[in-house]
Length: 428
Image (cartoon, rainbow, N blue to C red; front, side, top):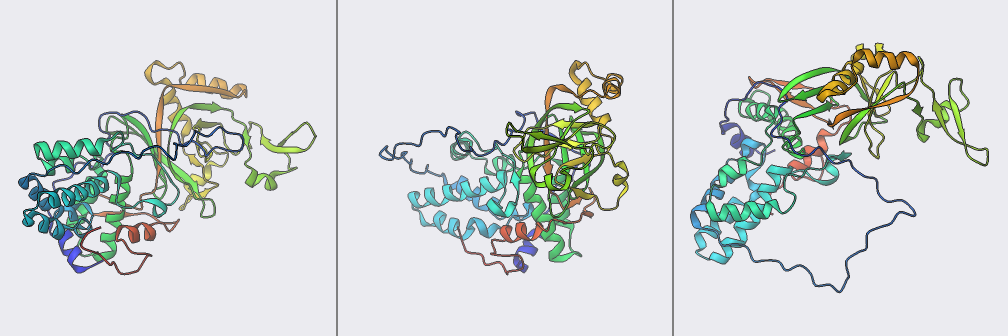
């Protein structure tokens, strides 16, 4: 990272940061469930006619000079958001402003606006650098970027509009503050802050009024409601060989006394062992293995219903002593959650739900498998934040066990690989 960028970043002042708590903006629809790709025999939507006319691309709107100048000024402040101003071509925009050519200014300012607004709302790092990222961010969906562009060139207010795209979660603000005060740690600490700020931009700006967030490096699961931490306990995530993906999914209920449907990847480990039931086809061959409810069941007494193509969900465990382990990266990818029965009881009784702790205990004692649904689905976000910040700017570092930070930082710096010096151009 260049000295120029470090100095730019460290000299930008930031507003005071609210207390470090989980915060949600006004509620949006819960995150969509990621659907698997269609398999054999699945109908695929028809493709557009190759001879159909391409959509007409409208010319860029005219930019009033003061609005373009405000855009140029704002670009030079984005170091405080962990971005590099050079990515947005401030010199090129300045040249277009000075040219007196309205068409050139419209083209350059519009392209710059779109790139900057997109990075602030959705994150600068895209594609494979996110690695196992399965979260849909709707923040600029439905032509919203075009709407914001027309609103800006018509009414002005570039700074206010751009700030309105940033994450509202106080942890983003805490990292932003840490970026301005972090000096002794040098480039490595600054890089950690910047890459985790971008990870917050990958998420929807509004996580919902009530949601569960699991930070894999932090090894905790947290229930947040109305901007407050309502429930938080330790979690066990995937081992290095079976890493937990980053995803968003709706939890719709729980299964009490669950069967464990053994994944094909683990079938060889359990085949023929006592305590497992073979499921056979019409030809008498074993198709899969199941583990019935009971003290030895790997899912424990409960699992959350979270339909997703990765078969990742929160569940109990039959070995609760593992929650006391110093490093809790031990699962095959799912999230074993401490005191998950208490979490289920809270969510099942919300909104007038019929289940409470006593009724849950009654079902568990019966040994019968039963699905109980929440009155309202609960969004669940499984994420990977390797650095957090306190309100005074102090950093909390978590173990980057999956070694994902280097790839994200390289993409943030627009380099080909971790450790390669950044090579910036005037504009993209």
